[in-house]
Image (cartoon, rainbow, N blue to C red; front, top):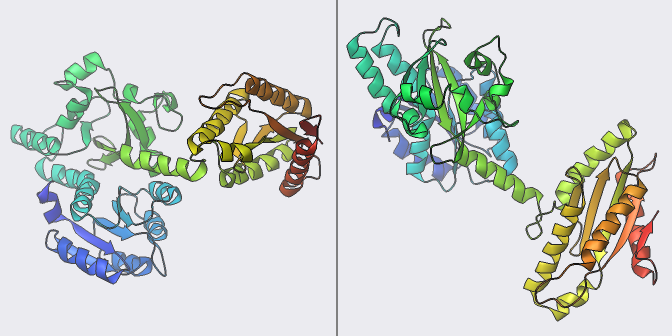
Length: 438
C-alpha cells in the first residue's frame, strides 16, 4: 500500500450510521491529509461544493434524505474525474450495476475491513496521484532531462495499475505492471510479440475493442469520448486468464498531445456483479430463469411481438406423478430428475427461446416468432427425449402433460397465461391426450 498517496489525499466520508462513521473516521483521519464527514448525500454535496480540494469520496449507499448512488450521480454531472469508493452491506446486483454506471472506482462490503477499505482508497486515487506527480517531475515529455526520466519511471513502476505514456504517435513509456501483465521484459519486446495495445483488447460486444475503432481517429481519443461506464476493455494476461479493466485517460498538459493512460483491473467487481445478477434471476437447482426474471422478459416480449405483429407461442408442462416421486425417492434423486428435465428442454429449443421454472414441477417455455405448429413440434421433441432418458437410481420413465397456446390480438399477460394453465389442466385430467392446445 502506497502510504505516500494516503498522506496527500483529502477525503469526503459519507455515512449515516453514527457508530460506523465515528469509528471509521477516527482511523482514516490519522492516515490521510484531511477528512471531511457528512451524514447523508445532501450534506455531502454541500460540503463538496465548500471544499474544492477534496480528491476522493467514500460513501455508503443507503442513507436518509439522499442515498450514496444518487449523490454520486449528481457529482458526476459536474465532475467525471473524482474517484469514488462505495461501502454497503447490500450485495444486490442492481446496486452493483448502478455503481459501475456512475463510475465507482471500488466497492467494499460492510462490516468494513479497514485495511481493505484503505487499499481500495489508494487504488481509486492512484491515477490522479500519478498525474499530479508527473506534472511535478517533468515539464515536457519531449524535452525531459535524465533525472526526470528516472523519477517518472520510479513513479510509474510503483503503481498497482497498468500505466503507459503516449503522444499518440508512439508509446513513450510503460510501467512494470504493464510488462508483468504481458510477460515481456521491455516495450520493444511487447511490440515484437504482441503488436499494438488496442490489438490486445478482446473482441467482445460488451467491451470496447478494436472493431469499434474508427480508422480516422486514434483509439485513445475515441475511448476518451465515451462515458465512464463504457470505457471498459478485456485483455488476456500471460497466464491465459481474461481480465477486465476500466480505462482512465489524462491529457498530461491539456494540449491533446501527451496522455497518461491507466488501466485499472475491475475483474472481481465485474464478476461479483455478474454472479449476483445470475443468482437473482435464475433458479438455483435447474439453472433456468426464475419466475421473477420470466415476468420481466415476458412483459417486454409481449409488447414487442404485439408491436411488430409477430407470432408468439407458450408451452407450460408439468412432470407427471412428481408428488409420488418425492415420497418414493430421496431428494437428491428427484433433484436429478428436475435437472435432467431442464437440460432436455434447453437442448430442445432455440438460443433465443426463454425457459423458466414455473413451479416445483412445472416448466414454462416462451417461443417468440413461433406459431402453434412450431410449438407442438417443440413438445414432440421434448417428449421424444423423455422416452430415451435414463437417470441413475431412478427406475421410472419420465412423462409430462403439456398445455400450449398462442398470442391473440387482445391478449394481456394474465389472459394468455390463464389460457395455457387451463390447457395444462385439461391435459393432466385427460386419459388420452397429454397435449392440449387452445
